[in-house]
Length: 203
View 1 (cartoon, helix red, strand yellow):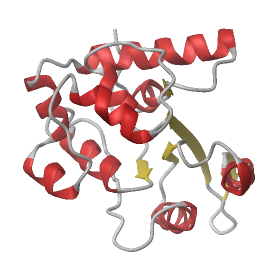
View 2 (cartoon, one colour):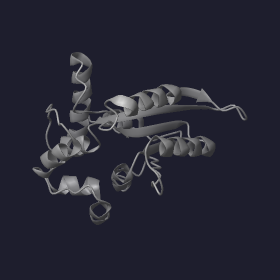
View 3 (cartoon, one colour):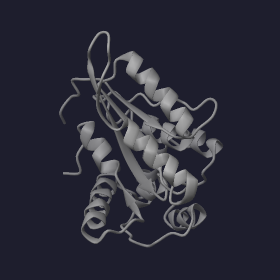
């Protein structure tokens, strides 16, 4: 696996992403993952604060991991689209003039779709997050609570329960390919793109 030359910041909206990304650190020591623990508010305001911190710290690539379940319609959808359009892409700091890029990695309905992809591929349209969590629980016991995340190192836990990280990457890439080909706007994960940027591929 190639080593990362430039520092990359990975920022999630909530504690799920924080604990999951940290669970990968022992396995992939050659990568530089810096998720920030969401100590206060979460959501777009939190993300922008963390993006600003990452810019000030000199990260050349800033990747935001996004749950889409609360951004599908109405005001929340409009706010997110404006937020994303304003921030994504290549930017330059003024003094000193340095280049950095912001990318968005989306999961629908939420990051747990990538966890489900550890075990199986699906195109099922989940009506809400609890429905997705129920499907994941058919593969392994899972609770979306900080207590559960502290008790289990998520990546290692999924593999211990019979899941496979490479399968998750492959399934995520497949979901995005089908999304592009069919226009499907549900049950997809861009996490393979995140790990590709970190030098980790499904093959």
